[in-house]
Picture 1 (cartoon, rainbow, N blue to C red):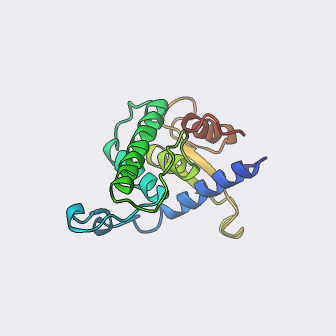
Picture 2: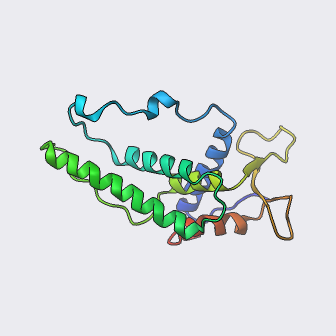
Length: 176
């Protein structure tokens, strides 16, 4: 079963999810040196882009909740939005204090698609299953989620509605 996408937004989210699943097999994202910030007092203020701030906040938060299966999706979503907006507020204070010509960044109200994908991949075993025995090319296959409980416990579920339900838990405003 393939995952049909009716809107461009759905196609984009599914594509991001498939790319991220594929990337899971590659090298770890970022090394420790890239994640360590130099002493802020020893360098002049340099504006940071909103995508970098979001990535930083999501990475830190997901590391802090790793293995905690008691958190509800709404709690994760709200905590992420709070942390991301906190990073944006700090960045805006730095820009203002340094008299930076860069405009203030706007706070966000919803998680972007890549953040949703990263949360899903950190919380669930999602894989791309090749049903062509390697003969269908890189774009062929279906996404499936490993079911840890319920009727399908121990199986990979390729139901489109299951994955869409998970996505909507982290971004309820996304239309499918």
